[in-house]
View 1 (cartoon, one colour):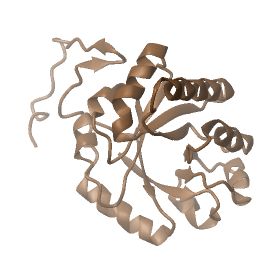
View 2 (tube, one colour):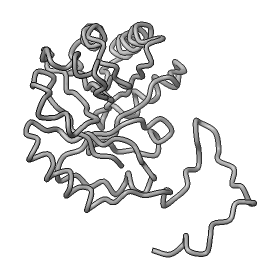
View 3 (spheres, helix red, strand yellow):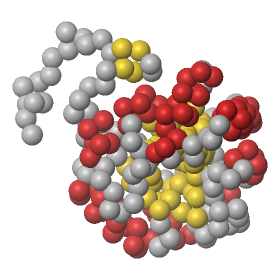
View 4 (cartoon, helix red, strand yellow):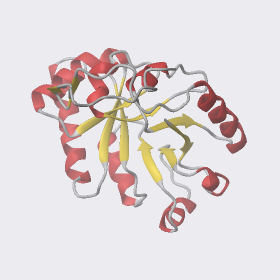
Length: 224
């Protein structure tokens, strides 16, 4: 796991450049320094949208050319069939406008939204859409095949991600670089990086995992 700051998009980027790569929380405004910092090589791995109007928010973010790998979209439980179709329509529109830009969509599902939204995506064959883990995530196994990013709080328990063998970004909301550095260091100490999951997944990309009997770990791999 790599801890990265999640910064409001309206903040001035200068104090954060030494902590790159970064993620942004879109707050409706972008400080004028971000595009020029990206042009000079700053890596912004994800932009987290508010989610009230994801298509319009996504278009506005893309207009600034920040080079983000992911747009993270918070999703509540769709109440009723019409709301489900509306959500699918929004996601389809976002897939169309991000096509060819190297940007992927990651849903940050509210706990109660997990079963219905996963069912909707399965019916719509939405394999191009991934997920963002957060402390409220309930069914991690159901998301594991397409878990592309995550977000936490300073006191979050990340052992479930460690057991999974998760090695990608963990965004930590921050508004002060010094406070963030201390919080990230504490999380790194409490949750050291892992090389392999504690339990191998039963499925991958929707298919059963078939063990390779020819693969043998060295004699020290089974020791703490």
